[in-house]
Length: 236
Image 1 (tube, one colour):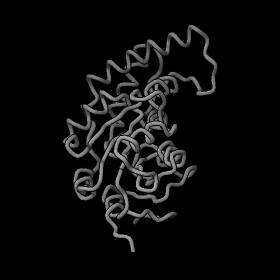
Image 2 (image 1 turned 180 degrees about the vertical axis):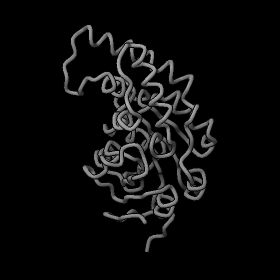
Image 3 (image 1 turned 90 degrees about the vertical axis):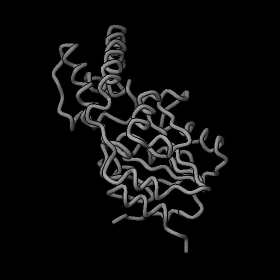
Image 4 (image 1 turned 120 degrees about the vertical axis):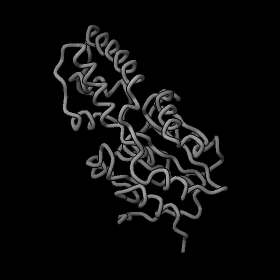
């Protein structure tokens, strides 16, 4: 059952923005396998998939940096910077070939997307994953026709939680913040919503549900069917 902290005016929503990893698709295993292949290549110990999942969400460079054992606030020496840049290239090339080995839509996602679609609504994806693999995954898993736009972490000058991507989507599709919601599985999506002044739905079934406790969404759901219900309720 969805937990509502601030009601979302579903009938007035014109722009629905979805995160990808942990929200629409379960990509945990393919990301973990690609990171571990990278770590083995650089003679570092492999990591459990659950640990790698906690590093996902801020984009590929940060995922690689964290997996290599460097903290976000650690100032890197030139040799460390070069190592991470090389590791990022390896990771992206490996992931490009293996991004769909195990990745699937979460249960009920396709049905949920169809149920929230209306002629007066625009559905989009805003991920911190690079845009090419994001679009490839969306298209391969049959979601492509449902989205007017799919943007990734390298589509704009900044990534979530910076509001730039949302602001561009608002302008592109002529929606106001009060007519827009983002659906995501981590605090990054919720903070993005706050920064852009839009509504938020948090998915507790995703890759980083623990982070939603630090940044509570307007509505917390545990399945795609629940966010679909929230987004199809008629205002009273």
